[in-house]
Length: 209
Image (cartoon, rainbow, N blue to C red; front, side, top):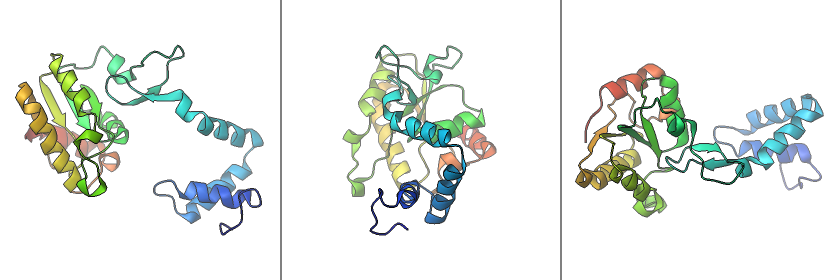
């Protein structure tokens, strides 16, 4: 179905191939999703297509922390719900690799500070160096004052550990306390898939780095 036939000649195969490009989705699951869409009212497919078509127009990164958020209608820089919440603890900042990690920590309900999203990890083999991460923005936030502790919550993997060490190295001269989440999260594990209890223990057992 997904061979050399063009999308115009085989729209079902085209959609299967597109779904299969999503992380964690194989061709069998992609086929089930495609046939599910076909089984819905035509309006569902149109709404889904419109949501995908306009996604990058309607979603931007938070001007402060890098979280994904809705674009302001007047085009002004937009803060996400976490940054805009006055009840959050502004003295504690949690550095995460990606937005799904932020979502996982929020789901756990343990952390009530604010975030800084790197949108990646240091990975020399993949050509990702310090210049590829928003570390200058992180330094500016610390330099503004008010932040007493930075919790580095990158994954406990080789790239995650390298990133944590580099972040600590950059921030240490600024006089802020830098801690690392504890090993409640298994080595090589992604925060996105950790359960709330594991994440809670990781934050409670964080250590200086």
